[in-house]
Length: 218
Image 1: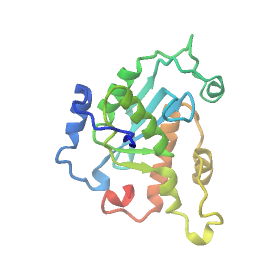
Image 2: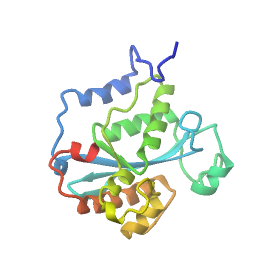
Image 3: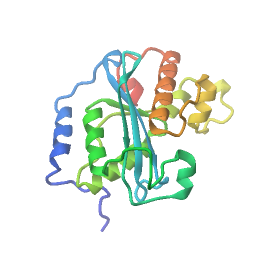
């Protein structure tokens, strides 16, 4: 018998209940009124199940404005370690210059920050997945937020006539090049979150003004 990957949790932890109740009776706001949280994770590798979160960066976006005064930057203590990943993000296991917190505390702070906002990210399926596995380790269900992938959304701005490879998957670096965005603090979670937020705003400016939130999240 096949066991479901995410089994229903009879009694989720209190911190998750506080998060989940925010979705009770929630109605979709107009896109211009919605709160978006653009986020990124740096991890020990690319396996959502076995790798771990090393840092989380997130910025708030409302009314086509990035609110840097309300941002989130977390660094997480982990026993899992990969020397190959350090070459990319520079986060060391020991003697790090960053103040680290437990994975449980990081997940709690992240849920408190995002609330019921719409989550935006580049290849967001990975970032959502690695957060979901962290939640699973804490005995909690998956994230409930709507999500938007900037890579997928960008392809809606490119006319089919100009697409030489319709199956192309754009990296964040390629998106920066296409949209003329400086790659400041690349491969830091907070830096990538800010870059992705800029990309999201530029993509929105190229799309026909959406009337409903689901026009963006479909």
